[in-house]
Length: 342
Image (cartoon, helix red, strand yellow):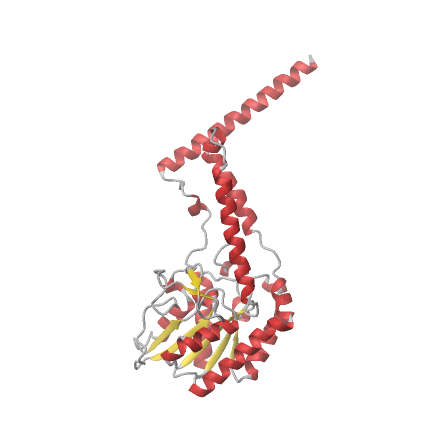
């Protein structure tokens, strides 16, 4: 009698689970058909867009560069409209940096370069132009080499260096990351090819749950202490020292003012672990006479996740983050009377 009751209860439990799963499956399909829930998983779990395609560079120091066939990239290899090389009457400002300045994750009009340009032209249209001369993944030495070989000919009235705390990393770090991404894509393709063709493989509910679990694993943030550890390696920090020294020589010869803007990691501003690294960057910049704006105080007025381009992204800025940066840079230029900014 006891065994019979157990079997009956087990059967009821299994039947209830089957009914619940079927209800979930048909309910999800009905909501997708009605347009209430998108059938496109990327809408539910948006991926970071606007990253810029890259290709191998013939310049051995640059290693890679933006692909000019990418619609985001102009004919000279940076994310912006095409500019005449000849200098106009406008005050020309060039923002140099990596994927943060590039604006990975946001449209071009929401990057701090575009927002800053709009703020500078509020009173008198066309008096300033801000060129977004950033390349995703570059370290300090690559950024300044790109400026020397391509950007310098535009003769900017001011250079803004968007310094991110991973700018001390050797280029091989990014190349290894690219290789890992490629290997992961190949692995995913093999997995997709071997997926079941039965009911489970055709279930949209199962597909949605699996996607949710995958995204949860990918977006789980960790403590990015590797940033400080990498920069503590002497040969890595030498990348920053060498880059700043070479930039100082070039800009001194051209009489081009430089402002260094430090972008914090978007991580726990109340217990921020990178203050010492900020101080090292400031000291290196000031050694060469570059004024420094540290954005930590401006960013710390918000929760770090408000400024992230995507959940768990501790580096790239959301549109709000770019607006905060542009407002702070604008104020800094005004207060220090830099490059005819009004």
